[in-house]
Length: 512
Image (cartoon, rainbow, N blue to C red):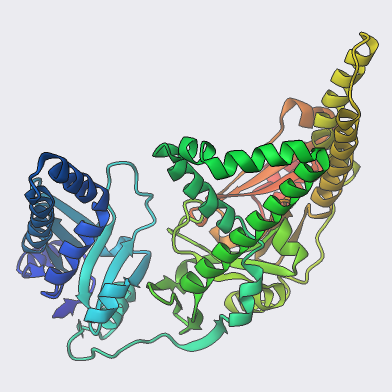
């Protein structure tokens, strides 16, 4: 398979029409039917039950045969073509679709291999363009190609225009894999950070949802063992119920932690981050491997994520801010998962080529910003205290747990406000804007000023009264907007001008 160099113009379009349409690897005839059967296991189960109740046991076999036939037809109806201008994918069993991606719009190339793919020597190649896929739209992926051809194909799709290069022959160099030098890798000891996330709780929530969806909760609640347990606990008294509740919470925490650790090992095991000088190559996964290649020319910074629980454990995770790769929608921007903060900051400095990013002290935003954090954090306590005081004045009895809750809300709100202000700040380095905010979900964004395409200075009614403003840097990279919260209003446009000289000059001149 010969991959032509990316070109533009009428001649390139004419040459593209002469390119042959290719089929996926024949080994996918073994993968597609299995995938279809696994996806529709509930349908197969229902067909089997229907067949058993009607005395016709062939219903299940008919359902499996239909799914296998559909999987085989998918291979026969799927073809792709790589030309000098576009990468095209033609597929559809009942409704034909043609997906076409301009090669100059390719922003990232992901390579993924599930267990069955790896056993057969196959891989899934997925192309990212930076455009968010909406409802009803499909991702551009080639499922699946010979794994030996994928590294060279990935390099050719990301190469762009290169002088003195007429063609990239993937078959001639099947082992080309210019991943460069290793700048970071995962360690098994990092699994200790997995419990400090919500992954396990989400898994438990999904399991509980399935139980309720299929009506199993009522059967469990009416089970004799559970009813006897509740009756015994009620007879034993409130203290026993409290102890049992505490034990249940501990068991829930242990189960959630175990699930989080298992997922962490499976998803991020053997992770490496390599830098070739032109691309960043991230690879991870034990059972289902994933490889992401990011073009360094589109790198606009990094995001150091420090959620509260992970921060208390001394950990952090690291994402890249890439043009055309949306971090907001969980696309391929991960550089390091939950791990030691020191390792995350080291990789960040290596990726950005600047060791000052994590160590630079941030500028505080002043007393007005501090007051706003305490006001927002303490209003639930004020509301609860007001309701309790009103009931007391009305002659109603307010039990002591309510007042205890008010005190706990006050302590928790004050602690949250203190931590939020402690994490609030920004800094300006030559060519960079650094901003940090949040407590439960703290982020430190290092954004290259060359990637900023616009600025917004915004004030709500309450911000105007407090004399602060929100400064928003717009960029086509990452989340699309990076925010400096509650900066003193008289310093807002000075910050803009410091990051992008001349951008805030006209507004500075008009200030009183």
